[in-house]
Structures are given as C-alpha cells and as structure tokens.
Length: 306
Ligand code: CO
Image (cartoon, rainbow, N blue to C red):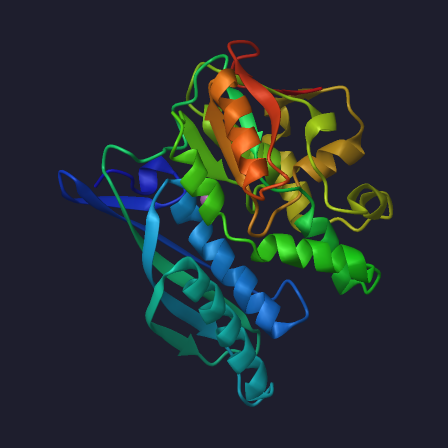
C-alpha cells in the first residue's frame, strides 16, 4: 500500500507492480442542485476529482444509490443515473456495477478506480518553501447551494455554479502532469483553507494566501452577508481557525471555509512553473486558474490570509 487511511490523502493507492498501482476513491451525498440530471453529473465529477488530484487516470466506477420508489417518482432516479453515466462517458470511465438501498433521503455517488504509476503519484504532502499555490475553480458552492435551498439564488448564479461543479478536473489534472508538481489536492468539504492546510500538515512550512486573488462565484459575498452560510462552514472554521492568521473580517473567513462540492485542484509548484501552468490552463479553457498564494517557512504550521 502506498497511500492508506493514515496518510489522510485524497485517495487510496495500492501498488500492483513496480510500474502500476490502483488509485481508489468513494464519495456520495444528498442532492445539491434541483435538477436530478445535473445532480448526477455533479456527483460523478466530484467522485472522479480525487483520482485526478493524485494524477491518476480513472478507468471504472460503481454507483452507490439511496432512493425510495415509494416516496419519489422513479423518473428522478433515472435522471440522476443518466447524469452520472454521462459524466463517466465524458471521462472515458466504464460503469461496471453499483448498489442501491431503499432510503427516503436521496443520496448518490460513486466508487471510482483509477490507474497510476507508483512513482508519479502527486501527494498532498510535498510542497516546498517558495512554491506558488494554484487554484483551478472559483469558491462558493456551499453558499450558493444554501441560497438555492432558501429559494433566493438567482438563475444566472445557479447556472454558473452548476456548470462549474459539473466540470471535470480531468483537463486540469492532465496539464498538471506536464509540470514538476510538488503537491496537490482537491478542494471539497473542508473549504479552501481546510484543504490548503492539508498541504502543510505535519511539515515545518506555512502558507500565505491572498484573499483578493481568490476567484469567487457570483453573489457569494452578498449571500454570506445575508446569512446564507451552510452549517459545515462554522464547523470547518472552528476546527482550523487556530491555524489561521488574518486581519480580514469574519465574512472572508466564512467564504474561505465554505464547503465545496466538486471544487478545483489546489496545486503547489515552483513559481516559474506555476506561471506557465496557469497560462497553459487558461489557454486550454480553465479560465478560473490562478495563483492564490505561496508556501513559506514562516509562520510555521499556519496560514496567513492577507
Ligand atoms: Co479530495
């Protein structure tokens, strides 16, 4: 085993041969958008993301479904599964099976298996002082989802957010593999700062993150000021706040700890390479790619947000 539970990395990695390992990940959750077809696509993009974050190539997936045919029209389930399959097909991944449980609360996700070279795994730990941090998607899906549930999110915001969550991290991962990347992860439930901390955990390094550089989905600041903040945000913040130094207002912290669904990759690599990586990503359609900060020696074990 190369990466297991104790490593707390994004995915498990098991070596088969000197030149081949499998990389595995499982994720499922309750609907985060109204349209079941969109939800299926988002859930699949989200489940595949951790394989891409490690530099792996997903090959097979299995559905995990919680659904009650008594409580809900079976059409809804069909649409969810159709959405998931659509994303898998786009990713070149074969759906090989699945399992469903009768449950009045809908949940959907996938267990994904990929292939990776044991010496080419991009781990969460390995960032170096002086590295730049590149983020590939905008932040704020938790806030927008909360606004959506409250019925106050405007159509354009929902459309942009859904489109971003449906976007595979495949291309970002493939471009990343053309560079000498030191560490990478994907931004999901712990929020940007929670996952950024994962890059320096147990190391003698710190991070500086420039809030003004972070791309935000539309209306995120406005919705946060209106109190449309998911409960997970406060848990994320309270858990990690002692590792954050900042003079920014609470609102900024609530955005930076907002739990993300199918978020972007967060990549550490030398500054020179980071500039080239961002340029390449933008040329190839990953418009949100941007350098948001750097890896530093001081403050050790902390994230300074400026
Ligand atoms: Co992850």
